[in-house]
Length: 508
Image 1 (cartoon, rainbow, N blue to C red):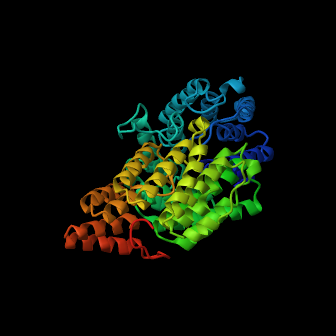
Image 2: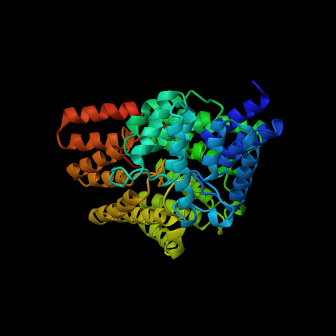
Image 3: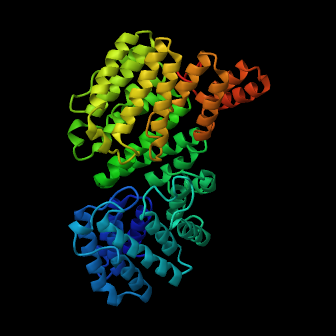
């Protein structure tokens, strides 16, 4: 196989794995090796476009437009099918670089994104045996509404059925198509993750050097309660990315967010399994990526900065949490979450008044209206929503420490309402489900039936999680339902088989 073809194939594989920087480098190298290759410039144009995780900035818009011009210049020497591909990608871009950049759904992108989806529909229909045409048709539809392929009630949107059909056609033609498997996972993860479980299992072993593709099955495994498998694929993904960075140039567009996402997902999966020591080590590794001088350019990174102190309070390591040093004052979100964690630790160790002082410091930061528009693009929702949950949860813990069960439950319900209203994201945007604290307080107050309902809802949202399985078992036992309690207890033992800490309830 000619070397240029190998670079082209590598570029397409990298694009399917959302390593767009690496894909562009590969397509450009293919074009250097074969100066007559029109499709090599098609690849540069395609990989420079928007995707479900990132809008297209003006620089990428200019690069894409220039690549289209070069592909069209070389098109007379291409095959008829290749010219059709070039015509399709040309619909995605325009000469107005600044005016055609922006997020999907912005007025300056809607017409071009729709035009590209329509062009890919036509191309896929013209070449019904081309799995790549079907897969990119599917991706073009997902790009019309990133991370929102269904209505919030689970009903289909305008393009949902067409996207599903395109994904299935790609996989019928080529069952190991990494793009088709990748898109199927994203398509079904929110509402029907079981429909993509086989795709996740298949993708997990197909591309061991492509970190993001190795990671992708976790989006299904976590949703189905396969937390051990979620941990394993994220460990492998992080290792694959480290190896890739060691021998291959990669732009920050892939290296920073996708590697961090692997670690973030690994941390969440370890927390779900009760692996406190492992989770803390991963949290330290993740937080080490964050530097205060990066946050203006990459604000989403601050979501990862407080994970060590949050891990400590999740596992009841109160003294260690209180010993964590204060973050730099410029990192206001991290400072707020540090205050929250300190308040949580103080409340759980009987120092409600000191906890209230930390709560007031958190509230002073949380009151800034700017948080409402501060988004963490890699993990869903706003910084303000996270701080709202933290404040309501801390208020509940302080009330519980003072013996006010009704007040605690009311605050927990407010936290849960905010948590439930956050946009879908994996891993979940807040570090633990507040229902687990709510259930623990209800159970301690003798309200076992109410606690049971809380734990069952938490298990519906986070299947097979050991924290709520233990709480459910305890709530059933207190109601005298011994057989049901034993069944839930067995589920807890299975979920906790790799745990590094013993727990007495659903929160420390």
